Image (cartoon, rainbow, N blue to C red; front, side, top):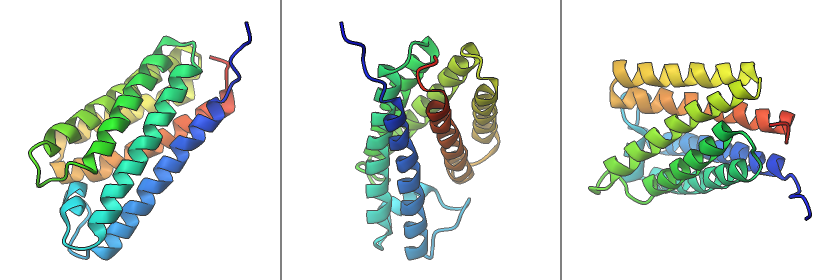
Length: 190
């Protein structure tokens, strides 16, 4: 039987591109909609903006969500570690819900459910992958995951929704970039 060729690095690049797409979409939306304020308005308000910011944000969520799904699938396909496998599944599901955030905007009843599901699945993925990193003796990357989960937990308890979304997305993007670098550096050693 032929062994599966390791393409985990390619899947990690999808994750890095996803973060770049979201950052660009956020920057474009913020530059177009001058009424939006960091930490005051939720990011989801871009999705219902009267300006073209809604197009940037909604398509940014859809594209980034799809890229996260692909990254999660890659994590499942090329991991032997249970934490990584579970984390990959959770990433894929969280990415699916992120794509739906770009479909079900704040003016629909489904938006809150989709946004909360996205946040919960991505938060759980951070925890699962941190456990996988710990088991694989990648303590630095496990520490990044633990710190990210802790910061997100504190933001969820202490901050309002606008603060949680803005800073939470930034923390999640930093973790996602670090985790993509983790896979690129240590391919198939798990």
